[in-house]
Amino acid sequence: MEKLRTVRGVHDLLPQELQQHNIVIKTGMEISEKYSYSQIETPIFEFAEVFTKPLGKSSDIVTKENYIFKDRSNDELMLRPEGTSGVVRAFLNAGLVQNLPQRFSYYGPMFRYERPQKGRLRQFKQLGIECLGLSSAMADIEVISLGHEFLDKLKILDKIELKINTLGDSESRSKYRNVLINYLTSYQSKLSRESLNRLMINPLRVLDSKNEEDQKIVEHAPNILDYLNSDSKRRFENICKGLDYLNINYTIDKNLVRGLDYYCHTAFEFTTNELGSQGTLLAGGRYDGLSKILGGTDTPGVGWAAGVERLALMVQSEFVNKTDVVLMGQSENFNYLLLPIMKKLVQKGLRSEIIYTGNFSKKLKRANKINASYAIILGEEEINQNMIKFKDLSSGKEKLLNLDQAIKKITK
RNA sequence: GCGGGUGUAGCUCAGUUGGUUAGAGCGCGGGUUUGUGGUACCUGAGGUCGCCGGUUCGAAGCCGGUCACUCGCCCCA
Image (cartoon, helix red, strand yellow):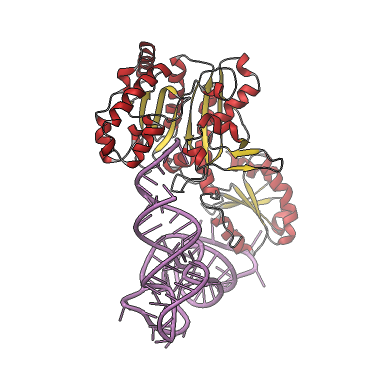
Protein backbone atom coordinates (compact mmCIF):
# COMPACT_ATOMS: atom_id res chain seq x y z
CA MET A 1 0.00 0.00 0.00
CA GLU A 2 1.65 3.17 -1.18
CA LYS A 3 -0.82 5.58 0.26
CA LEU A 4 -3.60 5.53 2.74
CA ARG A 5 -6.64 5.41 0.57
CA THR A 6 -9.62 3.34 -0.46
CA VAL A 7 -9.54 1.31 -3.64
CA ARG A 8 -10.96 2.79 -6.80
CA GLY A 9 -14.71 3.13 -6.88
CA VAL A 10 -15.04 2.16 -3.23
CA HIS A 11 -15.77 4.99 -0.85
CA ASP A 12 -15.91 5.69 2.85
CA LEU A 13 -19.24 6.87 4.15
CA LEU A 14 -18.77 9.65 6.64
CA PRO A 15 -21.64 10.34 9.06
CA GLN A 16 -23.28 13.01 6.94
CA GLU A 17 -23.45 10.95 3.76
CA LEU A 18 -24.30 7.78 5.65
CA GLN A 19 -27.24 9.55 7.23
CA GLN A 20 -28.59 10.29 3.74
CA HIS A 21 -28.24 6.63 2.84
CA ASN A 22 -29.97 5.56 6.02
CA ILE A 23 -32.92 7.83 5.32
CA VAL A 24 -33.34 6.10 1.97
CA ILE A 25 -32.95 2.64 3.48
CA LYS A 26 -35.24 3.29 6.42
CA THR A 27 -37.93 4.71 4.15
CA GLY A 28 -37.69 1.78 1.76
CA MET A 29 -37.66 -0.93 4.39
CA GLU A 30 -40.54 0.62 6.31
CA ILE A 31 -42.81 0.95 3.32
CA SER A 32 -41.91 -2.57 2.18
CA GLU A 33 -42.82 -3.87 5.60
CA LYS A 34 -46.22 -2.20 5.34
CA TYR A 35 -46.76 -3.98 2.04
CA SER A 36 -46.08 -7.25 3.89
CA TYR A 37 -42.58 -7.73 2.55
CA SER A 38 -40.28 -9.26 5.17
CA GLN A 39 -36.62 -8.41 5.38
CA ILE A 40 -34.18 -11.07 4.28
CA GLU A 41 -30.40 -11.05 4.28
CA THR A 42 -28.21 -13.25 2.13
CA PRO A 43 -24.40 -13.48 1.98
CA ILE A 44 -22.48 -10.85 0.08
CA PHE A 45 -20.60 -13.62 -1.69
CA GLU A 46 -21.85 -16.91 -3.09
CA PHE A 47 -20.62 -19.67 -5.32
CA ALA A 48 -20.03 -17.85 -8.56
CA GLU A 49 -22.59 -20.03 -10.32
CA VAL A 50 -25.43 -18.47 -8.34
CA PHE A 51 -24.82 -15.32 -10.37
CA THR A 52 -23.17 -16.57 -13.53
CA LYS A 53 -25.85 -19.10 -14.41
CA PRO A 54 -28.82 -16.71 -14.28
CA LEU A 55 -26.97 -13.73 -15.73
CA GLY A 56 -25.55 -15.73 -18.57
CA LYS A 57 -21.92 -16.10 -19.61
CA SER A 58 -22.17 -13.35 -22.19
CA SER A 59 -23.52 -10.59 -19.95
CA ASP A 60 -21.22 -7.70 -19.11
CA ILE A 61 -21.72 -8.28 -15.41
CA VAL A 62 -20.26 -11.75 -15.69
CA THR A 63 -17.63 -11.19 -18.37
CA LYS A 64 -16.00 -7.94 -17.41
CA GLU A 65 -17.55 -6.53 -14.28
CA ASN A 66 -17.23 -9.47 -11.94
CA TYR A 67 -15.39 -9.91 -8.70
CA ILE A 68 -14.75 -13.64 -8.98
CA PHE A 69 -12.06 -15.23 -6.85
CA LYS A 70 -11.03 -18.58 -5.48
CA ASP A 71 -10.87 -19.13 -1.75
CA ARG A 72 -8.48 -21.43 0.09
CA SER A 73 -10.65 -24.45 -0.62
CA ASN A 74 -10.39 -23.61 -4.31
CA ASP A 75 -14.10 -22.82 -4.49
CA GLU A 76 -15.00 -20.30 -7.13
CA LEU A 77 -16.79 -17.47 -5.36
CA MET A 78 -18.21 -14.17 -6.48
CA LEU A 79 -19.06 -10.96 -4.72
CA ARG A 80 -22.69 -10.43 -5.47
CA PRO A 81 -23.39 -8.04 -8.36
CA GLU A 82 -27.14 -7.94 -7.67
CA GLY A 83 -29.60 -9.13 -5.08
CA THR A 84 -32.26 -11.18 -6.81
CA SER A 85 -30.28 -14.34 -7.52
CA GLY A 86 -29.18 -14.68 -3.90
CA VAL A 87 -32.65 -14.12 -2.55
CA VAL A 88 -34.18 -16.69 -4.90
CA ARG A 89 -31.39 -19.13 -4.03
CA ALA A 90 -32.08 -18.66 -0.31
CA PHE A 91 -35.79 -19.08 -0.90
CA LEU A 92 -35.21 -22.37 -2.73
CA ASN A 93 -32.72 -23.58 -0.13
CA ALA A 94 -35.14 -23.00 2.69
CA GLY A 95 -37.88 -24.93 0.95
CA LEU A 96 -40.23 -21.98 0.98
CA VAL A 97 -41.80 -23.14 -2.27
CA GLN A 98 -44.12 -25.00 0.07
CA ASN A 99 -45.55 -21.76 1.31
CA LEU A 100 -46.38 -19.33 -1.46
CA PRO A 101 -46.44 -16.50 -2.03
CA GLN A 102 -43.33 -15.20 -0.31
CA ARG A 103 -42.49 -11.53 -0.19
CA PHE A 104 -38.97 -10.33 0.66
CA SER A 105 -37.19 -7.04 1.05
CA TYR A 106 -33.47 -6.56 1.39
CA TYR A 107 -30.69 -4.02 1.23
CA GLY A 108 -26.94 -4.22 1.22
CA PRO A 109 -23.74 -3.80 -0.74
CA MET A 110 -23.30 -5.08 -4.29
CA PHE A 111 -20.09 -5.23 -6.31
CA ARG A 112 -19.39 -4.58 -9.95
CA TYR A 113 -16.05 -3.86 -11.52
CA GLU A 114 -17.18 -0.87 -13.54
CA ARG A 115 -15.66 2.44 -14.44
CA PRO A 116 -16.61 4.62 -11.49
CA GLN A 117 -18.67 7.74 -11.91
CA LYS A 118 -20.98 9.78 -9.77
CA GLY A 119 -23.80 7.44 -8.80
CA ARG A 120 -21.88 4.47 -10.09
CA LEU A 121 -19.44 2.79 -7.77
CA ARG A 122 -17.73 -0.56 -7.57
CA GLN A 123 -19.20 -1.17 -4.16
CA PHE A 124 -22.68 0.25 -3.97
CA LYS A 125 -25.88 -0.47 -2.14
CA GLN A 126 -29.15 -1.69 -3.49
CA LEU A 127 -32.46 -1.95 -1.79
CA GLY A 128 -34.89 -4.32 -3.39
CA ILE A 129 -37.98 -6.41 -3.06
CA GLU A 130 -38.96 -9.77 -4.54
CA CYS A 131 -42.41 -11.30 -4.75
CA LEU A 132 -42.18 -15.03 -5.38
CA GLY A 133 -44.86 -17.50 -6.27
CA LEU A 134 -47.43 -15.27 -7.94
CA SER A 135 -47.77 -15.29 -11.70
CA SER A 136 -50.79 -13.00 -11.60
CA ALA A 137 -50.48 -9.55 -13.10
CA MET A 138 -51.68 -8.29 -9.74
CA ALA A 139 -48.25 -9.08 -8.30
CA ASP A 140 -46.58 -6.91 -10.94
CA ILE A 141 -48.93 -4.07 -10.11
CA GLU A 142 -48.31 -4.47 -6.40
CA VAL A 143 -44.56 -4.41 -6.89
CA ILE A 144 -44.65 -1.28 -9.05
CA SER A 145 -47.02 0.36 -6.62
CA LEU A 146 -44.63 -0.33 -3.76
CA GLY A 147 -41.76 1.18 -5.70
CA HIS A 148 -43.86 4.20 -6.55
CA GLU A 149 -44.87 4.67 -2.93
CA PHE A 150 -41.24 4.40 -1.84
CA LEU A 151 -40.18 7.22 -4.18
CA ASP A 152 -43.19 9.24 -3.11
CA LYS A 153 -42.19 8.89 0.53
CA LEU A 154 -38.75 10.19 -0.40
CA LYS A 155 -40.50 13.22 -1.94
CA ILE A 156 -38.69 12.87 -5.25
CA LEU A 157 -41.52 11.64 -7.42
CA ASP A 158 -41.79 14.97 -9.23
CA LYS A 159 -38.32 14.44 -10.68
CA ILE A 160 -39.03 10.90 -11.80
CA GLU A 161 -40.63 9.21 -14.75
CA LEU A 162 -41.99 5.67 -14.82
CA LYS A 163 -41.49 3.73 -18.02
CA ILE A 164 -42.99 0.32 -18.55
CA ASN A 165 -42.98 -2.27 -21.24
CA THR A 166 -43.60 -5.94 -21.69
CA LEU A 167 -41.36 -8.60 -23.15
CA GLY A 168 -44.21 -11.04 -23.44
CA ASP A 169 -43.95 -14.72 -22.74
CA SER A 170 -41.26 -16.78 -24.41
CA GLU A 171 -43.50 -17.63 -27.39
CA SER A 172 -44.23 -13.97 -28.13
CA ARG A 173 -40.68 -12.97 -27.50
CA SER A 174 -39.08 -15.46 -29.84
CA LYS A 175 -41.55 -14.55 -32.57
CA TYR A 176 -40.72 -10.87 -32.11
CA ARG A 177 -37.05 -11.58 -31.88
CA ASN A 178 -37.02 -13.15 -35.33
CA VAL A 179 -38.91 -10.27 -36.86
CA LEU A 180 -36.57 -7.80 -35.21
CA ILE A 181 -33.47 -9.60 -36.37
CA ASN A 182 -34.78 -9.54 -39.93
CA TYR A 183 -35.53 -5.86 -39.73
CA LEU A 184 -32.21 -4.91 -38.18
CA THR A 185 -30.24 -7.11 -40.52
CA SER A 186 -31.60 -5.11 -43.44
CA TYR A 187 -29.98 -2.01 -41.92
CA GLN A 188 -26.74 -3.79 -41.07
CA SER A 189 -24.57 -1.34 -42.96
CA LYS A 190 -25.93 1.66 -41.04
CA LEU A 191 -25.89 0.28 -37.52
CA SER A 192 -23.17 1.24 -35.05
CA ARG A 193 -20.55 -1.31 -34.22
CA GLU A 194 -21.96 -1.87 -30.72
CA SER A 195 -25.40 -2.48 -32.11
CA LEU A 196 -24.10 -4.95 -34.66
CA ASN A 197 -22.46 -6.77 -31.84
CA ARG A 198 -25.68 -6.77 -29.87
CA LEU A 199 -27.58 -7.94 -32.90
CA MET A 200 -25.59 -11.14 -32.70
CA ILE A 201 -25.69 -11.65 -28.95
CA ASN A 202 -28.82 -9.94 -27.77
CA PRO A 203 -30.87 -8.25 -30.50
CA LEU A 204 -33.42 -6.73 -28.12
CA ARG A 205 -30.71 -4.56 -26.64
CA VAL A 206 -30.26 -2.74 -29.94
CA LEU A 207 -33.57 -1.07 -29.13
CA ASP A 208 -32.13 1.05 -26.33
CA SER A 209 -29.00 2.13 -28.14
CA LYS A 210 -28.20 5.80 -27.60
CA ASN A 211 -26.48 6.18 -30.92
CA GLU A 212 -28.41 8.71 -33.04
CA GLU A 213 -28.24 6.74 -36.27
CA ASP A 214 -29.33 3.61 -34.45
CA GLN A 215 -32.24 5.43 -32.91
CA LYS A 216 -33.50 6.52 -36.32
CA ILE A 217 -33.50 2.93 -37.43
CA VAL A 218 -35.04 1.70 -34.20
CA GLU A 219 -37.81 4.28 -34.42
CA HIS A 220 -39.37 2.38 -37.30
CA ALA A 221 -38.56 -1.05 -35.98
CA PRO A 222 -41.38 -3.49 -35.40
CA ASN A 223 -43.11 -2.98 -32.07
CA ILE A 224 -43.12 -5.85 -29.62
CA LEU A 225 -46.66 -4.97 -28.61
CA ASP A 226 -47.80 -6.07 -32.09
CA TYR A 227 -46.30 -9.51 -31.66
CA LEU A 228 -47.72 -10.46 -28.28
CA ASN A 229 -49.99 -13.46 -28.16
CA SER A 230 -53.39 -12.80 -26.63
CA ASP A 231 -52.42 -13.94 -23.11
CA SER A 232 -49.36 -11.71 -22.99
CA LYS A 233 -51.29 -8.83 -24.45
CA ARG A 234 -54.12 -9.11 -21.94
CA ARG A 235 -51.63 -9.42 -19.14
CA PHE A 236 -49.98 -6.16 -20.09
CA GLU A 237 -53.32 -4.42 -20.43
CA ASN A 238 -54.24 -5.61 -16.94
CA ILE A 239 -51.10 -4.10 -15.54
CA CYS A 240 -51.77 -0.75 -17.18
CA LYS A 241 -55.30 -0.92 -15.84
CA GLY A 242 -53.98 -1.56 -12.32
CA LEU A 243 -51.65 1.42 -12.53
CA ASP A 244 -54.58 3.55 -13.70
CA TYR A 245 -56.57 2.42 -10.67
CA LEU A 246 -53.70 3.59 -8.50
CA ASN A 247 -53.35 6.88 -10.36
CA ILE A 248 -49.75 6.08 -11.13
CA ASN A 249 -48.48 7.94 -14.17
CA TYR A 250 -46.43 5.98 -16.65
CA THR A 251 -45.35 5.97 -20.22
CA ILE A 252 -45.13 2.85 -22.34
CA ASP A 253 -41.66 2.64 -23.78
CA LYS A 254 -41.54 -0.01 -26.44
CA ASN A 255 -37.77 0.09 -26.44
CA LEU A 256 -37.39 -0.67 -22.75
CA VAL A 257 -35.89 -4.14 -22.72
CA ARG A 258 -34.05 -6.56 -20.52
CA GLY A 259 -31.09 -8.48 -21.78
CA LEU A 260 -31.31 -11.60 -19.70
CA ASP A 261 -33.22 -14.66 -20.77
CA TYR A 262 -35.10 -15.30 -17.57
CA TYR A 263 -36.91 -11.98 -17.82
CA CYS A 264 -40.39 -12.03 -19.28
CA HIS A 265 -43.50 -9.91 -19.40
CA THR A 266 -43.25 -6.76 -17.33
CA ALA A 267 -40.19 -4.52 -17.35
CA PHE A 268 -40.21 -1.12 -15.72
CA GLU A 269 -37.84 1.66 -14.74
CA PHE A 270 -38.17 4.76 -12.63
CA THR A 271 -35.69 7.21 -14.08
CA THR A 272 -34.57 10.79 -13.58
CA ASN A 273 -32.63 13.13 -15.81
CA GLU A 274 -30.93 14.81 -12.86
CA LEU A 275 -28.11 12.32 -12.56
CA GLY A 276 -26.68 12.36 -16.08
CA SER A 277 -26.23 8.93 -17.53
CA GLN A 278 -26.86 7.27 -14.17
CA GLY A 279 -30.57 8.07 -14.35
CA THR A 280 -32.03 4.72 -13.45
CA LEU A 281 -33.11 4.93 -9.84
CA LEU A 282 -35.33 1.91 -9.41
CA ALA A 283 -35.87 -0.82 -11.95
CA GLY A 284 -37.28 -4.28 -12.12
CA GLY A 285 -39.45 -6.76 -13.84
CA ARG A 286 -40.75 -10.26 -13.96
CA TYR A 287 -38.32 -13.18 -13.91
CA ASP A 288 -40.35 -16.36 -14.09
CA GLY A 289 -37.47 -18.40 -15.46
CA LEU A 290 -34.94 -17.63 -12.76
CA SER A 291 -35.66 -20.27 -10.12
CA LYS A 292 -35.47 -23.03 -12.70
CA ILE A 293 -32.13 -21.77 -13.99
CA LEU A 294 -30.84 -21.94 -10.43
CA GLY A 295 -31.91 -25.56 -10.31
CA GLY A 296 -35.02 -25.18 -8.21
CA THR A 297 -38.72 -25.66 -8.67
CA ASP A 298 -40.17 -23.45 -11.35
CA THR A 299 -41.48 -20.47 -9.38
CA PRO A 300 -42.64 -17.19 -10.87
CA GLY A 301 -41.19 -14.00 -9.49
CA VAL A 302 -41.32 -10.26 -9.87
CA GLY A 303 -39.36 -7.54 -8.11
CA TRP A 304 -37.19 -4.50 -8.35
CA ALA A 305 -33.97 -3.02 -7.03
CA ALA A 306 -33.14 0.58 -6.29
CA GLY A 307 -29.74 2.27 -6.09
CA VAL A 308 -29.27 3.67 -2.60
CA GLU A 309 -26.46 6.07 -3.57
CA ARG A 310 -28.46 7.44 -6.48
CA LEU A 311 -31.55 7.97 -4.37
CA ALA A 312 -29.45 9.56 -1.63
CA LEU A 313 -28.17 12.06 -4.20
CA MET A 314 -31.76 13.00 -4.95
CA VAL A 315 -33.02 13.33 -1.40
CA GLN A 316 -32.91 16.73 0.19
CA SER A 317 -32.39 16.55 3.89
CA GLU A 318 -30.58 18.45 6.53
CA PHE A 319 -27.82 16.71 8.43
CA VAL A 320 -29.11 16.27 11.94
CA ASN A 321 -26.38 15.94 14.48
CA LYS A 322 -27.57 17.79 17.53
CA THR A 323 -26.60 16.96 21.07
CA ASP A 324 -29.33 17.56 23.65
CA VAL A 325 -27.21 18.11 26.73
CA VAL A 326 -23.58 18.74 27.46
CA LEU A 327 -22.21 18.26 30.94
CA MET A 328 -19.27 20.20 32.26
CA GLY A 329 -17.49 20.46 35.56
CA GLN A 330 -15.69 23.35 37.11
CA SER A 331 -12.52 21.31 36.95
CA GLU A 332 -11.52 17.82 35.99
CA ASN A 333 -12.26 16.56 39.50
CA PHE A 334 -15.94 16.99 38.84
CA ASN A 335 -15.91 14.70 35.82
CA TYR A 336 -16.53 11.69 38.07
CA LEU A 337 -19.69 13.25 39.42
CA LEU A 338 -20.89 13.89 35.89
CA LEU A 339 -20.74 10.22 34.91
CA PRO A 340 -23.85 9.10 36.84
CA ILE A 341 -25.70 12.21 35.70
CA MET A 342 -24.94 11.40 32.08
CA LYS A 343 -26.05 7.84 32.65
CA LYS A 344 -29.38 9.06 33.90
CA LEU A 345 -29.81 11.46 30.96
CA VAL A 346 -29.07 8.69 28.50
CA GLN A 347 -31.59 6.45 30.23
CA LYS A 348 -34.13 9.19 29.67
CA GLY A 349 -33.29 9.01 25.98
CA LEU A 350 -31.28 12.22 25.77
CA ARG A 351 -28.23 12.53 23.60
CA SER A 352 -25.50 13.66 25.94
CA GLU A 353 -21.81 14.40 26.02
CA ILE A 354 -19.50 15.17 28.88
CA ILE A 355 -16.95 17.81 27.98
CA TYR A 356 -13.95 16.59 29.92
CA THR A 357 -11.19 19.00 29.11
CA GLY A 358 -10.38 22.65 28.81
CA ASN A 359 -11.17 25.63 30.92
CA PHE A 360 -14.70 26.84 31.26
CA SER A 361 -14.53 29.03 28.23
CA LYS A 362 -13.22 26.16 26.12
CA LYS A 363 -15.94 23.86 27.30
CA LEU A 364 -18.64 26.28 26.33
CA LYS A 365 -17.03 26.81 22.98
CA ARG A 366 -17.13 23.09 22.42
CA ALA A 367 -20.78 23.03 23.51
CA ASN A 368 -21.50 25.70 20.97
CA LYS A 369 -19.62 23.93 18.23
CA ILE A 370 -21.51 20.68 18.60
CA ASN A 371 -24.74 22.61 18.59
CA ALA A 372 -25.90 21.45 22.03
CA SER A 373 -29.22 22.69 23.35
CA TYR A 374 -28.57 22.68 27.08
CA ALA A 375 -25.67 22.51 29.48
CA ILE A 376 -25.52 21.02 32.94
CA ILE A 377 -22.79 22.64 34.97
CA LEU A 378 -21.34 21.30 38.15
CA GLY A 379 -18.97 23.14 40.49
CA GLU A 380 -18.40 23.87 44.13
CA GLU A 381 -21.33 26.25 44.40
CA GLU A 382 -23.70 23.65 42.99
CA ILE A 383 -22.32 20.80 45.10
CA ASN A 384 -22.74 22.86 48.26
CA GLN A 385 -26.39 23.39 47.48
CA ASN A 386 -26.88 19.84 46.14
CA MET A 387 -28.04 21.26 42.82
CA ILE A 388 -26.83 21.56 39.27
CA LYS A 389 -26.67 24.66 37.15
CA PHE A 390 -28.93 24.33 34.14
CA LYS A 391 -28.18 26.53 31.17
CA ASP A 392 -30.28 27.05 28.09
CA LEU A 393 -27.62 27.53 25.43
CA SER A 394 -29.84 29.27 22.94
CA SER A 395 -31.04 31.98 25.31
CA GLY A 396 -28.05 31.94 27.62
CA LYS A 397 -30.29 31.87 30.68
CA GLU A 398 -29.29 29.69 33.61
CA LYS A 399 -30.84 28.46 36.80
CA LEU A 400 -29.99 26.35 39.81
CA LEU A 401 -32.13 23.21 39.69
CA ASN A 402 -32.01 19.67 40.89
CA LEU A 403 -31.42 17.04 38.22
CA ASP A 404 -35.03 15.89 37.93
CA GLN A 405 -36.22 19.44 37.37
CA ALA A 406 -33.59 19.87 34.66
CA ILE A 407 -34.58 16.66 32.91
CA LYS A 408 -38.18 17.80 33.00
CA LYS A 409 -37.19 21.07 31.32
CA ILE A 410 -35.24 19.30 28.59
CA THR A 411 -37.81 16.65 27.79
CA LYS A 412 -40.87 18.87 27.82
C1' G B 1 -12.92 -1.35 -21.81
C1' C B 2 -13.04 3.70 -25.08
C1' G B 3 -12.97 9.31 -25.42
C1' G B 4 -12.93 14.44 -22.87
C1' G B 5 -12.11 17.53 -18.27
C1' U B 6 -9.89 18.25 -13.46
C1' G B 7 -6.10 17.52 -9.38
C1' U B 8 -2.39 23.73 -5.12
C1' A B 9 -3.66 23.86 3.13
C1' G B 10 -9.11 20.14 6.51
C1' C B 11 -12.86 22.88 2.77
C1' U B 12 -13.70 26.50 -1.44
C1' C B 13 -10.33 28.47 -4.60
C1' A B 14 -6.20 32.46 -6.41
C1' G B 15 -1.29 31.87 -8.32
C1' U B 16 0.65 36.73 -14.67
C1' U B 17 4.58 34.77 -20.68
C1' G B 18 8.46 29.11 -16.29
C1' G B 19 12.07 33.17 -11.92
C1' U B 20 13.78 33.99 -4.50
C1' U B 21 11.16 31.65 1.56
C1' A B 22 3.49 29.20 -2.80
C1' G B 23 -1.26 32.85 -1.18
C1' A B 24 -6.62 34.25 0.36
C1' G B 25 -11.31 33.23 2.68
C1' C B 26 -13.55 29.73 5.74
C1' G B 27 -12.20 26.09 9.29
C1' C B 28 -8.53 24.54 13.16
C1' G B 29 -5.03 25.75 17.69
C1' G B 30 -3.50 29.56 21.39
C1' G B 31 -4.66 34.37 23.60
C1' U B 32 -7.62 38.97 25.13
C1' U B 33 -11.31 35.98 29.44
C1' U B 34 -8.35 31.06 36.31
C1' G B 35 -16.95 29.79 36.46
C1' U B 36 -19.62 31.48 30.84
C1' G B 37 -20.14 30.09 24.42
C1' G B 38 -21.98 32.44 19.77
C1' U B 39 -19.45 38.42 18.22
C1' A B 40 -14.90 41.14 17.86
C1' C B 41 -9.64 41.74 17.95
C1' C B 42 -4.59 39.61 18.35
C1' U B 43 -1.76 35.34 17.15
C1' G B 44 -0.16 30.47 15.56
C1' A B 45 -0.03 25.78 13.08
C1' G B 46 -0.93 23.43 8.66
C1' G B 47 1.50 22.25 1.59
C1' U B 48 7.25 16.89 -1.16
C1' C B 49 1.31 22.19 -5.81
C1' G B 50 -1.94 13.91 -6.67
C1' C B 51 2.47 10.59 -7.78
C1' C B 52 6.86 9.27 -11.02
C1' G B 53 10.01 10.76 -14.75
C1' G B 54 11.65 14.38 -18.59
C1' U B 55 12.87 19.42 -20.68
C1' U B 56 15.38 23.76 -18.34
C1' C B 57 20.45 27.53 -15.08
C1' G B 58 15.46 27.33 -12.79
C1' A B 59 8.89 23.73 -13.03
C1' A B 60 2.75 24.51 -9.18
C1' G B 61 2.62 26.37 -14.58
C1' C B 62 5.76 22.95 -20.27
C1' C B 63 6.17 17.42 -22.05
C1' G B 64 5.42 11.99 -21.10
C1' G B 65 3.59 8.31 -17.95
C1' U B 66 0.64 6.95 -13.78
C1' C B 67 -3.20 7.27 -9.90
C1' A B 68 -7.78 9.34 -8.33
C1' C B 69 -12.14 12.07 -9.17
C1' U B 70 -15.44 13.84 -12.87
C1' C B 71 -18.42 14.09 -17.82
C1' G B 72 -19.89 11.18 -22.08
C1' C B 73 -19.87 5.99 -24.32
C1' C B 74 -20.60 1.00 -22.66
C1' C B 75 -23.43 -1.20 -18.85
C1' C B 76 -26.69 -0.82 -15.32
C1' A B 77 -29.38 0.43 -9.55
